[in-house]
Figure 1 (cartoon, helix red, strand yellow):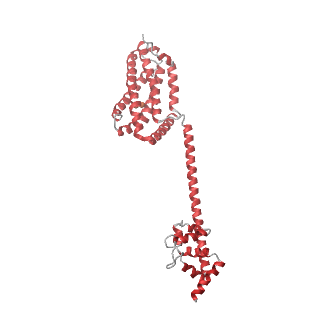
Figure 2 (figure 1 turned 45 degrees about the horizontal axis):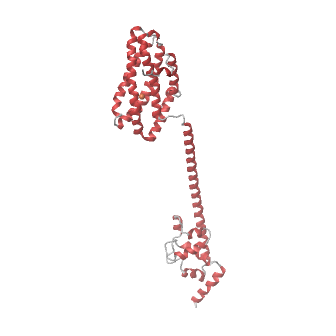
Figure 3 (figure 1 turned 90 degrees about the vertical axis):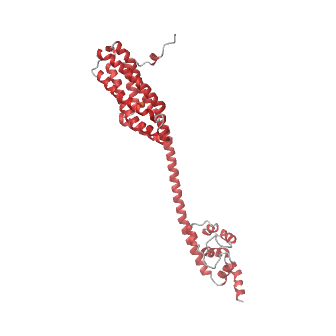
Length: 344
Ligand SMILES: [Fe+2]
Ligand SMILES: [Fe+2]
């Protein structure tokens, strides 16, 4: 009889409440979702529920949610027995309280998860903004880099300046032998001073000897085998530079010094032409390969910084202006004058 009354309470309960909601609420509060039997039916129940239950029904549980759903031993949310128990023996109040407690807990969890998600989105937003800024910076750098040069390009165009001084030396040498009084000693001294400041103290000492040669030597190979000779030529070049400046410091070149000075200028050019050519074709490419793409970029920036600190601006532009002025003073400014005569 008692069983009959219990069963009879079920239709009454169904008429008054949505049993699925009640059942689902109580069951969800008691049981960990997705681990026990009756899962398919329970999923269907939860899917009908709104709010946090819907999330529970999809069993998309955070660890905190899973802990909240710790099962009550002996109960299964999918069992008719539990449903009848709740409906038939007057457990509406406990069920209601459990449902409300569950919803509060789930709401709190969802809110916390929502804030976490928003924080994550904000983080993603910042990341995207950062990426966008980096892209913008990259684009800006690319635009600004139209005039920028790579490390090796920088080194090689510096060689260009030095080669123009070597041309001066080669052109002046025979004129010294022929008529030393006709040579502008001050202009020759200016060329040598430029080689000293731009070539020896900056290009050789600050870049090649401090950065390029140690890297190339460590990397080994053909370029490493050239370093000792290159260093010896740097040293010999400085001796010659000091000699030229000494012989030109009075503003005129004495007849007794002319021939020796001419020979020295020619010897210097003969030494430095293959020197720069080996660096351009063997040493600098080896340096680029040894440091890798990023190291190459970084050192390029570092070289530019050194150049600006040393000369107070673009050292290359300053040197080009100076060498062009010296060429004019010595009558060597016209490129056409260097065109070889026709073959006869
Ligand atoms: Fe060098
Ligand atoms: Fe060099």
